[in-house]
Length: 192
Ligand SMILES: Nc1ncnc2c1ncn2[C@@H]1O[C@H](COP(=O)(O)OP(=O)(O)OP(=O)(O)O)[C@@H](O)[C@H]1O
Ligand SMILES: O=C(O)[C@H](O)[C@@H](O)[C@H](O)[C@H](O)CO
Image (cartoon, rainbow, N blue to C red):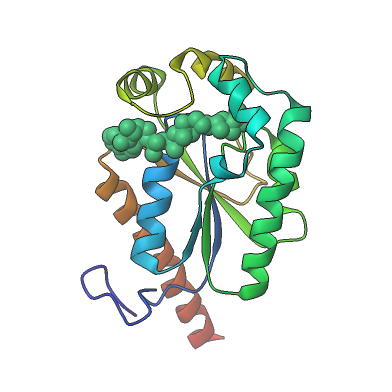
C-alpha cells in the first residue's frame, strides 16, 4: 500500500478507482479539491461548470439562479460523463454543485458514484466569492445556492470534509480516508 509520500507508478497510491463528484455550493472549493485529487491520483477530471449549456451560464452571469428545469439537461451531461468513466474503469473526479437530493439521484443513477461534500461556513464563502476574479458566478447568488442546498442524508453515498482548512490539508484528509478504507478491506479479506 502506498503512502502520500511515495506515489506509486500510475499515481493511484494503491487506491482503487473511484467515481467521485465533488459537490457543494458555489465557492466551497470544488474545483480546487477535485483537480488536486485527480492530479495526485492520476484520475480523469471534468469541470462540471464546463458542461452547462451557454444559456445557464448567461443566466447565472446575469444574477439569476437556475431552476430545476435549467439544471436537468446539464445534470444529464454530467451523468453521461460519469457513465463513460465508469465504463472506462479508470477512476474519475467531476465537480458539480449537486445541490438537491434529486440531482444527486440523477447523477448516480445506475452508477457506483460517490459524493465528496465540502462543508464551508457562510462567512468564508462570502469572503471567497468576493475575492475571486474571472468567474461567471456572482457573489449575489450565494444566498440562493445556500437556500436551495439540501444536506446529503446518511443513506446517500457521501464523504463529508471540512473545507475551511488549506487545500493541501483537505486533500490529505481525503486521501487518508481512501487509504483507511483500502486497509479495512485488506484486513477483512485476510480474516475471511
Ligand atoms: N481550502 C481552501 N482554502 C482557502 N481558499 C480556498 C480553498 N479552496 C478554494 N479556495 C479558493 O476559494 C475560491 C473558490 O474556490 P473554487 O473555485 O475551487 O470553488 P468552487 O466550489 O469550484 O466554486 P464554483 O462552484 O463557484 O465554481 C477560489 O478563489 C479558491 O482559490
Ligand atoms: O447548480 C447550480 O446552481 C450551478 O451549478 C452553480 O452551483 C454553479 O455552476 C457553480 O457553483 C459555479 O459557480
